[in-house]
Image (tube, rainbow, N blue to C red):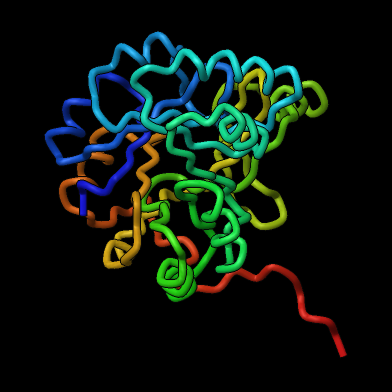
Length: 265
């Protein structure tokens, strides 16, 4: 199964360790187009000597940024595919008729068979939502008309905002701003890991998600390993054992997500 892993590379020096473990597909954040990820310039990504090289663009873009991307994508030489969130990227790639693989990654939207297959008619693959149970994921993957991608390991993205939340909180509430900060919700005590750059803020879960029980799913293009904020030793332990450590959990795999309260009678 490890040959089906797509791993986000937060540090180039770790590439050889990933390859030795059997990983064969690699994801890199593109400078200027990501929030919540470490990024690299296109020139640096092109020089990295690995096969199955993908880039991630997880920002919601403005019209000018979409236009700029049209020029950037024409410079791709060794990139196999693009993992993206903004539908404008899909429109650009469709019009340019490139041979790049298109993988849609909208964290909380691909949660049912109809919407999944709607997009699989248009793109090469997509990421299934990260707040579903194991049984729900099996139903969707079994009915998907193309192989899909599943988040297997790493901090789950809880939310994304174009606002500079850490900067705003420092200004309004005198909370010291850091590029990465742990925020505690006073009402519930739940902690979130906030990552901010000039384009916005991403909130990650406090616990590392370990979805080892998903490895028996079929119809999978890639199992995604997100190394962001996770120590390299812990990532390698997972790749070599798939075992769960103390600061990890299985998210919603064995408990349903409550989307709304039932109406009172």
